[in-house]
Image: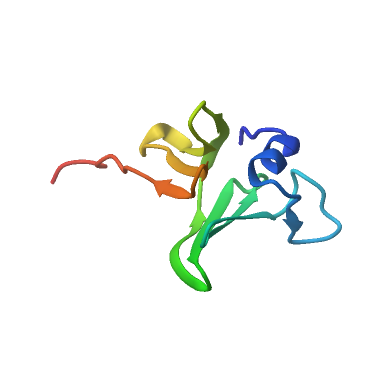
Length: 119
């Protein structure tokens, strides 16, 4: 799995991650990042060794979206555009469009899945 440096993810989420296991340092094991903008919070967890990602969004205390165990993540890139920041998850085999999580100026999630075939 191709991933950015930990420093880039800390910059993006504006905080250190929490670790799933205290004895495992980046990039081994599950690491979780949390960010809040206005009333929306995103919890993004990544296990680079397994190639798995998890994403949960909250409005206040209410869960509004959960994408749990996104498998076969091939690449994660940090976006630094003039009008927004975020990350993009690319999946193995490019059978899906990348998932995009915008973190600035506001939190926004988008994912356009390509058809897998015609029946």
